[in-house]
Length: 392
Image (cartoon, rainbow, N blue to C red; front, side, top):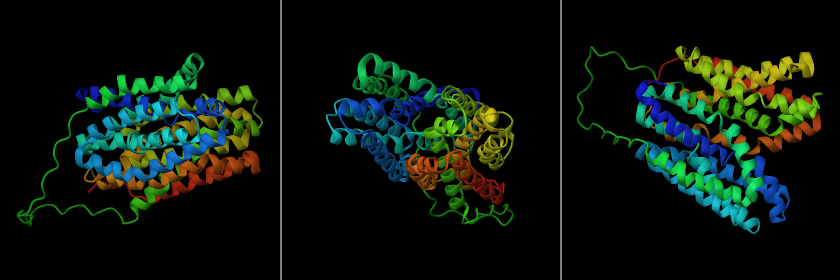
């Protein structure tokens, strides 16, 4: 991935990212209900704490990116391994709402400074413009986070209870995630700004024009719209499929296709689409969900598998675009802070997507797909507006 010498870095960081995603973002899907029963609180209290964690993650994203720009990814990601272990340990000992909220807020810090955006910034800090292939490699490995994390969470909860499952994940962070993140290469010091640099030669080529001043805003909207759709589908896809006429067993089987389709989309980006400017891959990704919706509306439940595949493949490619598009338009300088700012609306959309889309689904049933499809098409239109330019 990139070159032969890059694969150990990709393997270490990708494995650490798989653990980080499985034990934070994907954790409540299996443990929220047991947590609520064990603490004697409504399930809404657990999901409220998760939402608070995601809002905290959104606020911390730019700060974490700035820290990686300055010191590199190793100290920041190593710190998130320790915080993840601490947050999961706090959850395992919670006796009420206060402990529940404290544990999830600690995990919110981890989600804001230790997931994909932080990993992408760490790679760019190490590899600069050559980070695209490594970013794809990281997402290929971590794309199996739910595939690995959900069964493992379920097994630990069955064997040890939800408290034991939290402690099990905490132990994995200390035994696996911490050494992997601590073994990342140290980033080279940032160069001092030249104070007495000679003026450029008259014969030197003119520097490339800076991106349009709206480029960052357009990317922020594209990522927020597509992440809203992705999070909404992750939370409500089985119910949505059943509202369209699928059986429960069929909805579960169709939903299981999304994960492999995401990985297939990332393999496509790494192979065929790698030769193209990332904006072309992003345009194709933005169309994935609307095309799936069109097939579903035209053909009904029989098109459910095609809908899941198109949605999943588009989501998988867009995950890579979130790392590569800011790099190709703005370059590696200040990448972490800029990435954090661009992704801030996405994190807010992620926090509220399950609630908002759930309300739409309750009111309109499968008609809620028109809303998610419109968001995907608007993201595509914005990406068409962006020119396929190189970075500065």
